[in-house]
Every structure is written in C-alpha cells, then in structure tokens.
Length: 260
Image 1 (cartoon, one colour):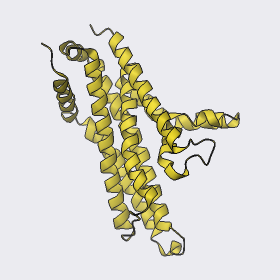
Image 2 (image 1 turned 120 degrees about the vertical axis):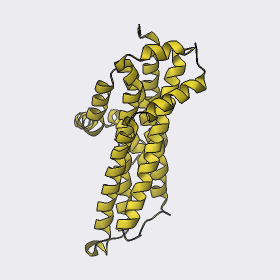
Image 3 (image 1 turned 120 degrees about the horizontal axis):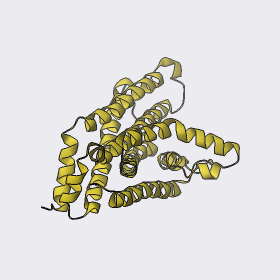
C-alpha cells in the first residue's frame, strides 16, 4: 500500500518528534549561544570597556556568530543522523517500499532536515538575543543592520547545512560516520585545509569551501574584503551549490541502494 507525499512528510515529522535526538541536538547550540552571549555581553558592559566605541555592537556580533556557528554544526549533524538512521536500523526497506517513489521519501527527509535546522537557528538566536539583553544591561543594538542580517541569515544557513547533512547521511548510509565526518570537518578539518591552501597561495580555492562560504554569507557587508572570503552574493550561490550537491548525491545513492 503506497502513501502520498504529504503522508510521507507527516511520517518523517512523527519520526523526528518521537525520538529525543532532535531536541538533544537542538539544545546544544541554544546553551552555547546563551553562554557565549552572556560572556561577551558581560565583558562589554564592564566599566573597563566603557570608553570603547561600539562595544555593545561588538558583543552582539560575537555572541551571534558563535550562536549561528554552533547551530550550523548541530543542524548538519541532525540532518545526517535523521536521514541515515533508518538505513542503519534496517527500517528503510518498509519506508521506501511503501512510497510510490524513493525520491519522495528523500524529498521529505530533506525538507524536514531543512525545517529543523531553521528551527534550531530561530530558537538559538532568540535565546542569544535575550542573553545579550539580560547580561548586557539591556544595551542591545537591534537597530543595527548587520546584527539583524546575522539573525535572519543564520536561519537560512542553518537550513542549508541541515540539507547538506541530510545528503551526506544518505550518501554514506551511516548516521555515525556521517556525524563524525561533519564534526571533524566543520570545527577543525576545514581550517586545516584552508591553512594548507593559504600556504601554497590557494586562498581563492579555500574561499569556496562550505565553511568559508558560510562565513561569506554571514559576513554580509564585510564579505569580499579578504581573498579567502567570497563576496556576499557569490558566497550565497556557493553555499546553495554545496547543499544541492550533497542532496543530489544522497538522492542518487538512495535510488541505487539495495534495500532488500
């Protein structure tokens, strides 16, 4: 008996909400963002820095960058774990056989991964802003264009990294190894590659890596000032291409995978 596309989407949502994985992974960036914002807001509001120009803006930007950076990591890990879990536990056969087409199941997984990644960012950014307001003595530059842009763009990049992680999970077929690959690449692996490329004059190549493209998107009005950071519009396109490439690779691998 086949199910409709909307039924598949509801099934994926139920699969997410029935497990603790989604909120356990989402809790981490919220805590990290709240703590980072509290620390930088406290430093900015101290008497020692009272004469520093735009100190509140600096604290807000650092707090939000840390928040969005951690959200990106955990959104990607969620996408990887969510997409590959049924392959790992052997429940994929029933799921894919019940669907009219395997591609519909993959599409539902991608949409749910993107939505959860975006939701992570919304909650984490709101908590970060609240932490900045509380520990920064209420001095929150919400009228600053870059602060607002980071809040909005953080939701977009988290959704895209959720898609990227989903594609990687489908491609590798293992939630563990896909999650390990993401955790190894995002905080450390890409920095090593960037350092190596920078040492041999490959800054332009380093700028198109997914993490560097994310920096270019979040830098907004400052992107393009360095050879290792793409201008905003180019960074958006590159990040979209990375997410699409991993989603497509995972999609094709799933269509060809033997699930019997």
